[in-house]
Amino acid sequence: MGLTRAIGLDVVAEMIVPLARAVPATLIGSGKVGEITSAASALEPEIIIVNAQLSPVQQRNLERAWRSKVLDRTALILEIFGERARTREGRLQVELAHLTWQRSRLVRSWTHLERQRGGFGFLGGPGETQIETDRRLIGDRLAKIRRELEGVKRTRGLQRKARKRVPFPVIALVGYTNAGKSTLFNALTKADVLAKDVLFATLDPTMRGLRLPGGTKAVLSDTVGFIADLPHELVAAFRATLEEVLEADIVAHVRDAAHTETEAQKGDVLKVLAELGVQPGRDRPFVE
Ligand SMILES: Nc1nc2c(ncn2[C@@H]2O[C@H](COP(=O)(O)OP(=O)(O)OP(=O)(O)O)[C@@H](O)[C@H]2O)c(=O)[nH]1
Ligand SMILES: [Mg+2]
Image 1 (cartoon, rainbow, N blue to C red):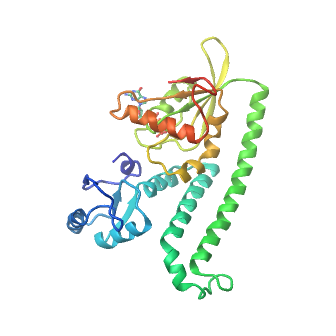
Image 2 (image 1 turned 135 degrees about the horizontal axis):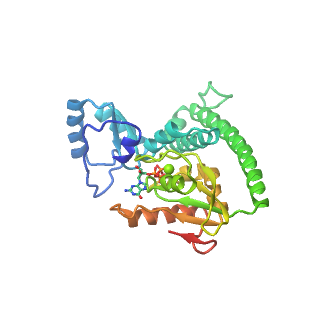
Image 3 (image 1 turned 120 degrees about the vertical axis):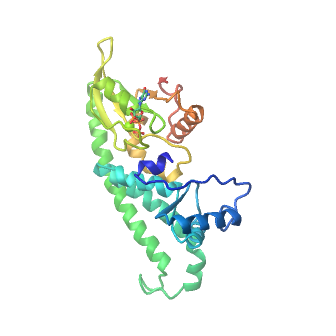
């Protein structure tokens, strides 16, 4: 729900589907698929969102059954990221995530076709099948994006080095999306970054100086929030942004203690941090 609101969609109906066992062809059982087909023909939604990971085959089958565009959780998060990214770096990272994800789906959904059509490729080089062409095009674009991101990273590294010369400690705010990171950031630095009751309001990192009560100067960084079930390739794509976190002297975990899922959110945040190679409390001070 939060994710759909985050992209400005009106939810006309929602349904919870118990999933005892995943059905390979459609994920959910045929009874539920049918129920949603009738609901969809009455409501004619522009889009149906399944809050889970769908394989390319499942997505295609559901789209056929429901006669509607179907998005899964990852696709929806990618849409939100695409809408939010403002800086060049942000946009590059979103494209990197999107293409990596697309490529992984190409491989899985098309291997059988590839075999059937093998040898008839005339769109690419000699003997190249459509899938190989697609994969090659995506691969070329990915390589280009990675190079551009390298450039951005180098600039950022230089900035970081410049900061190190004036050795202010860097404090990175991390936390689940919508926990209140930007609100705290604004309150502490008198900045005016967007703080809003939507998921992923912040996508691009921001840094500001602040003076600690003892008079010491420090740098505070605000960054993209974390979320449960974020596929690996998405986390990897945001590595450059999250580098500020990797380099921070202190990591501050902002939690929405009133949220019903607050403990689960904490677990998700720690998991993403671990994936990034940050060991809160062990490799640097960690405040919650
Ligand atoms: N009640 C209450 N609401 C808060 C508090 N801190 C932030 N909020 C509200 O929570 C919502 C999300 O705040 P943000 O600061 O945008 O959260 P964020 O962690 O930066 O979220 P993303 O950038 O979207 O990941 C906003 O509507 C804030 O007004 C707080 O201490 N108490
Ligand atoms: Mg924010």
